Image (cartoon, rainbow, N blue to C red; front, side):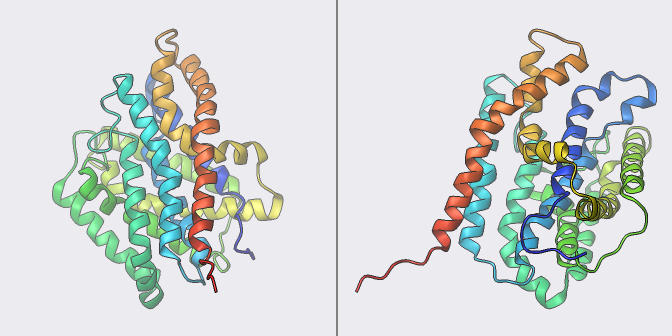
Length: 317
């Protein structure tokens, strides 16, 4: 496979599947009977997001210099305003568990922000030592936190607060960087459907294990990120050979809004209707205005900010 420095097809398919998995896990999964409730998974999908994020951040800078100020300006304008608006909406509606300290959803956005800040420091180190060493070191640190501190009764992997959650997720993010660095030379056996099935099946098994055994997400998400990277590579390979899945690619462009807003939208919908499948469908419909009027303008503002910072000042004679 050969790729240029532009957009890599297939990533938005991964984003769409992961975002929808989180939505279904939160809004539909709990109402399903028996083991069916484990079909849709939330935390493994977030781990897949981390791998994708590491890939997307590093891919443009595989072989060129990183302009730190334009990079950081673009990334923070891209994610902070939508997250802040979502937080304010949630607090207005009384969703106190929607917060960046000890709640859900926003914990991963805090991790992303930390990874963006660390990337200008990580990149020169990786170029000297290689990504595998950094992944190994971060894995040791991740398990030092999770094994040393344990988990709650649910086996969660994001209970360590903003000070340490990023440490637990860092290996997954760095694996995404490694995937980006080596995309041209990595090969996978099997079809994309095999990798989709194996990844989805493994995520469901890990969800079941988290709920029913001592082997919670806090122990299993690092190995799962390796599988997620293989799935992501298979989607990229499939898109390059057969073309992307257009509908999923379109959904994937709004994945951040889907991830941020689905609980808020569901809370609003449940004021009027309660069947989970109806709540889920209507909630997905309510997400588009947020994407159109909040997230999408931030995309444009982030691009403009990067361009402004990249443009050298004009000297006046």
